[in-house]
Image (tube, rainbow over all chains, first blue to last red; front, top):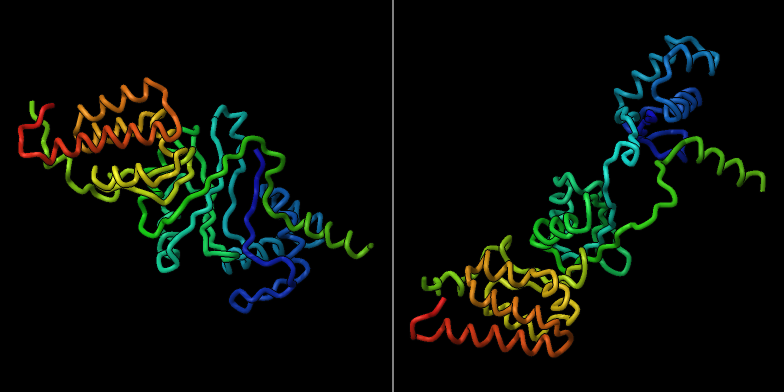
Length: 183
Length: 112
């Protein structure tokens, strides 16, 4: 089980536009450490950054209050736990007048993990869905998604082999940035 | 027991309609809210969709469970057992459903 942290900020900028609060270098360092392991104590973080644990506490409180840290959650290894599930990506072509409503309705289903709209050649909704098996996936799409007003077509791709699954991390972004600068 | 003609021929709610897919999760955008509309869609829908639903027994289930027509459902089950595909399937399915529709709409007593 790995502790993860969700950070609500666009990492490319050192200044956040969220509620006019600026993140300084220490904040970013704390966030990076928390994202690696959110179970670290304030003292452990303080020791790594050479600051007092009370400073770490204050900074984390501030970032929680302002929504930079959305929540702390456990990242579970479902396979080890014996939970079988399949993941699929749905692309839903929708009536442009209904797209917004449709996307919002889709967020209500527990089987739908992510919902986004995209406008490339046409306006579509992209959604990540999970189910125990293909039969359950099809039943969910046929009975719960296809009947929603505004659905014109659905394309679904079921993931058969996963090569990577990670969340965005500040550390990997910093590494990529360093590599770019060295080139 | 006579089949309820009005039940079989009625327009169903959005959540009870038949939605045509070509494979798992791939919805064609075609749907049928009544047996009449179902017949029209048999003519137009991608043949892959007819094959997909026939062999999953989806047509039989929808016609029996939602429309309440066990006889038509049984006729489709027999068609499935014959393992026909392609346009032969489309033609036979169309024939079976249109024949049943004519019967249901006729003024004579309807058999089960």
